[in-house]
Image: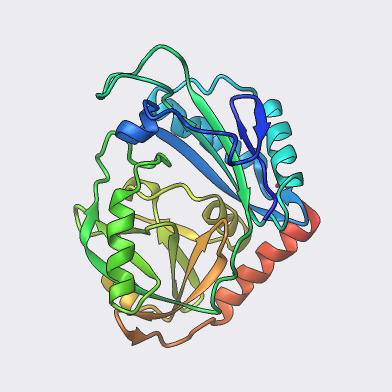
Length: 276
């Protein structure tokens, strides 16, 4: 695969570009990121992703040090230089620093990379894992590079024959997946955990709420997911992804009418507006 990576203003091949072993993302997981779907050579919903990138950076006290126009231009160059690009990732780290939690004074490191995206299966099998999201965490709701919890939870899901893990939060409210938001359908009501549960403010989640007149609820539980008429996951790469089973039990409706309506509405929006 031919590809290029943009690091701090320089476009080069992955073999030419290296991150410092003292970068704070490497040593302590200090950084934020965004993953965007690339559609016909264009990153989808770039404006919303850049807005969330800056919100996450503010939570961590990171100064990105690059304008949105510069990030857009660098992203376009990376996508153009990457054969078959299906996803784009923008990562901002704390930059080079000491071997500890304190940051150095050299400023952030910005890395932009693209790669092909493998297709998802038609439906998703999920399991509820025993670990919880901390809705009172200092970085709750920020999209940080500290994904060790997600790695462990996803490995547990795979071991259980599923492809996504679902978290509750510390008070038992339904929260999110490792890389997804979750929606529950009751009758014709489209419901999703509210942001105060600690879930990420997903870009696709945000669009689906607007397109379906869906509602946010802080009182949804994992039992609501298990007993849903239908349910689906959302993410920038999955779009609207029907849930087939929860903890091995098949839902009443798989890819039901509300799920299909949400999916079709998102696809129609993207067909007419690549940066809604």
